[in-house]
Every structure is written in structure tokens, then in C-alpha cells.
Image (cartoon, rainbow, N blue to C red; front, side, top):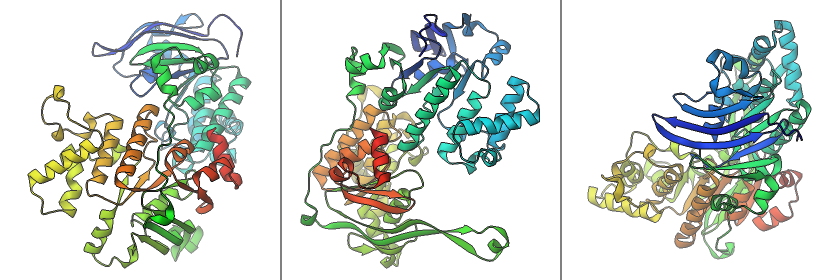
Length: 536
């Protein structure tokens, strides 16, 4: 961090409004050359809008105040002048590289375009510079990766390509908007270490926009906390984390998941899910002319063994591509599999007709990662939550079905707000917050009274405070109903709070399994140790 008292960026009285309605209320902050400042807050706090408005990248935003970059007011520059600043002096790393990168061009072409436009390099020079930039981010085989399209790279590789593109013009300031949210826990640590190394090498300042306090503690020099468009607290990371002054900051720091589960002895409860030598494989095309005649075979889950009893939670942890989501699909009977897999004593292979399948499906339900994409935008709340009743209890009248829907929603903490007026059961998912939508998804799963819930990353799309609320709800429902959970996640904190037992997956294999306290406190496998250390 630089000791230069003159700030590189000095934001004074920044205001942002949409249609005359203010969303950012006159905030002030400054970043020194070479400094790392984290802008922290929940979704809707205004942190991303504030940062992107500095470059006027938010459509239809009415921006006021001053943003002095080396003494020049960015908010007073013309669009033509601002184009010279964007990417050249101030670069941006966006949250989701898959949507930020152009799918029609290779990553090398996209990086080379920046070098040619901003640095005036020839095509050959830009190509060589692209490989050099990719190599500096630690991406394997940079020459070959430069010729790959975004969909051909992993999540971590795409994020490295985004970083290489941002660094192409040697910016003074880097805006990193949730740069690790879409990544696994170990990749998050790698990205932060990479950003820190590159920041020191290039001497640039970084404005990190995030809601992940662990990342802030590990990466930033100073932190600024936003709530509802107001900057409520700022200071050094050490001071703010040790003695937060504002109640909102204290709430954020206290939002780490807490363990509140009943220890049910596994030998005193019926087995609801059992796998013996479970294997899931997919056909894949073979290279060359061999692919004309036959398919290859990719084994996504190999010889997995586990058991889940009533009232307990089995956590499945691993990075993307480890096979954990495929294992969940097998438990739900949604992919063909080999080996033994029984749900409440019944094998999916034994379900020969639709009636037999429905009987098993009623006992095992699922809650997906992103409630916004898993809930139909064309269906009302009553239709979404009551859909299972129409299939499994077709004899219910409309009034009986509506009463059960209202009871299920009340059970997950969703009750009508009379101030909003109208019939809330007739509202649509977009009219609810992220946490409320996840509660809707849980109510939809619970209304048919299942014995087992498959929870596929149920809180990864939520803010820390909402995450804590949803986990508390799941813990309460498990205690009251004796539910069993198969919890799929890459978050070690969620596993520690929710699970009784855990299995660790890597490249389709279970590399470690056992009681959660034993596995997390004294991991035996190097991969498990890596996951635990990355989450610390």
C-alpha cells in the first residue's frame, strides 16, 4: 500500500438515482495509489451501482457528485473522453466471466483487441502480448488457451482470462465486482492471491466489491460498508473487524452460519438413502474417425458408498467437476446409474411404472441453488407451491389445496403483509426478495411431506445475513419434522453448521468420509486439507 497522501481516486458526495428515485445517497471515499479498498454490503446496498457509476456504466442512472481521478472529475468528462479512461486508466473485472466474455470470439482475440485499441500494437505484437498476459495470470498452456472460446475454459480459467484482459492496458485502478462469487472455495483463494501479486507487480489500486467478509479480511487494506445506499462505516480492515462501530457492520460480521442441529444416533433411525458402489457415467465423443462409430465413456461418479438416516444431514463437498451434483441427480432418480442406490428401501431401477416412481418421488424432494431460475416466472406463488399437491394429492379441492399452500408458506416464515394489499398468493416470484424466493422453493418441496430433501447449494446465491436465516430455517424444520438432508455445497462453513456426516469428492471419487467434526478438524486427505485451509 502506498504512503502517498494524495488519493488516486477521491469520491465526494456521489449520488445515483433512477427515474428521480435515489439509490445512493451522497457517499464519500478515497483510494490511494496502490491501495486495496473493499466496498462491502448486501445485495441492494448500492455498492456495485456506486462503483460502476464512476465510469457511467449503469444504464439510465442519474449520477451526481464528484469522482476525481488524479484530479480530473470522471463525472464531468464527455463520453469520448471517458472512453479513453475506461480500460486504459480504470479497468473492470465483472462478476460472471461467462456473460462478460463474448462467446463468438476466442479469449485471445478479445485480449488482443484491447492491446491493439489501447496500446496501438500490431496484430503480431498483440498476439504475443496476449500469451504473455495469460501466462502472467498462471493459466496453464497460455498459447493454447488463447485460441479457446470462453465455454471451453473452466470457471477459474475464464476469470484469469478476464483479469488478463483488465491488465492489458496497465490500468491505475482496477474495479473488481464480486470476482470470486462464481468460483469454488480453493479457486477463490487462488484468485485473491493472483490479484494481490499482480497488484504489487503493477502498482495499481484495487476497489473490491463483495459481500464475502472472509475475502475482505484476507485481501483488503481498508473497508467501506454500505447499507441502503449510505456509507455507514469505513476504516482499516483490522480496526473495523476488531471493533465495528455501526450496528449493520456488527450484524454482517455476526452472520457466520451457526451450528444448531440435533445429534441423532445413526443406528437408531431408519435408513432413507443408501448407496453401494454407485457409479454414474456419460457417453462422450471420441476424437478422430473413431467417434464416427462409437462413443467414449466419462465416469462422473465412481464407486461411491454412503448412508443417510432419518433426522441427519449428509454433506457432500467438493469443487466444480468433482461429481457432487451428479451424485445428487442420481439420488433424485434423474440420471441412469449403476450399483446399488435405494431411497427409503426402494431402488430407482425397481420403479417400473409411473405410479411407482411417483411414490418414491414424493419421499425425496429437491431445493435448487438459484431460486430465481428454479421458480417459473409465469406461475403464481399458489401455483408453484401447490403444484406437488395436484400430482400427489389430486383429490383435494381448490380450497383445501389453497389452505395447505398457506400453511406450508407459514411454516417457512412467509406470511402475508396486509400493507401491500391484494392476494399475495397470486403474486409472482420476481415480486419477492432472494431469501423469500428460497423460502418459496423450500415450501414447494415440503408441501408433499417428504422424508428426504436434496439441497443443491441452497444458500450460495444469497447474502450472508439471508444465508444465515435460511440455514436456521432448515435446521428448525429438520428438528420438527425429522427430515434427512443430502446437502451439496462447496462452502465449508455451511457443512460445519449443518452436517452430521460429510463425504469429500474429487474427480468423481469419494476421497474422505466420516463425522463432520472429525473430517473438518483433522482431515486425512490432502485435498480435504486444501479445502479446509482455503475456507479459513
